[in-house]
Image (tube, rainbow, N blue to C red; front, side):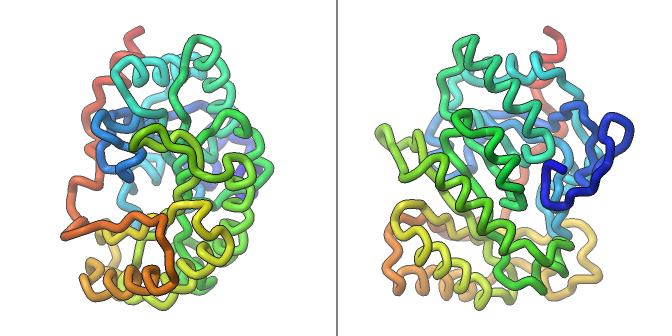
Length: 296
């Protein structure tokens, strides 16, 4: 019941829609340099990629872990130690990637880590397919919300994520996230508190993108940052979805960015040049930090 799927699966015995049981699984931990500049900085964001996903988009760039095929089991104590290890390695923050289905365990691990000296801002990096009551478990523990807003169209959400209620659900979730963290706070070039809403442009979907950009600006103005992303990379088997089996064109991206400029949006991140490259898809095969924690 943690996510809007509400699959009612007893995850002590079986896998939920997310593909995971109750036991925490982490697929990768790293100092990640490919987030927004105010998140990655020069030292890197201390990313923890959790296995499984409640949304399971057909085009997922992290499908190897989103489908629940990869990951190492950690106890809550080991997860808290992983947070502290990333801090000791110089991470700018702790970045929880696809954390929804492990929210209660993550909340406990954060409390343990903070009690042992975790001082870094905590980033909640999510598809926004979230239940507000689950997000409320993280209140006071998360400093920065980094949600997607993928679709406005129910039809697109149904076709690519089997979630026709995506926009209405995500809009409520983002509202709850903003209530918790409020307007952005920076120290130098790094964000310490606030929200960045990401929107990745899809091939042939610029009209939908414009509606999303306008919704965010009308709802939050300059109290949030909007990250307009061009890094869509066709992966996996998209034979049933030929319309998205290509990269986004420069023209498509420029149309959405120019629309944002015309709206008067100032707090935004844009991507320059060809960004749909392998560098945005992490290597999930090697992980020194996870190995170190498991040996402890």
